[in-house]
Image (cartoon, rainbow, N blue to C red):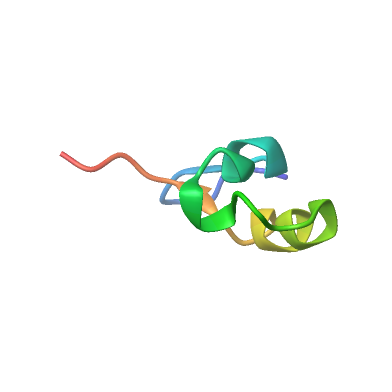
Amino acid sequence: MAPGPGGDHLEPAQLKRMPLFSEASDEELKQVAAFAEAREVS
């Protein structure tokens, strides 16, 4: 998937490391990853 204008898309494994998603199933993580973007805040 190409990055959107605001950031790079996250992979399910990256989401799994976040406490909010740590207990999500692989299928749930795949669904969320389709919409999640990494953004840098300064």
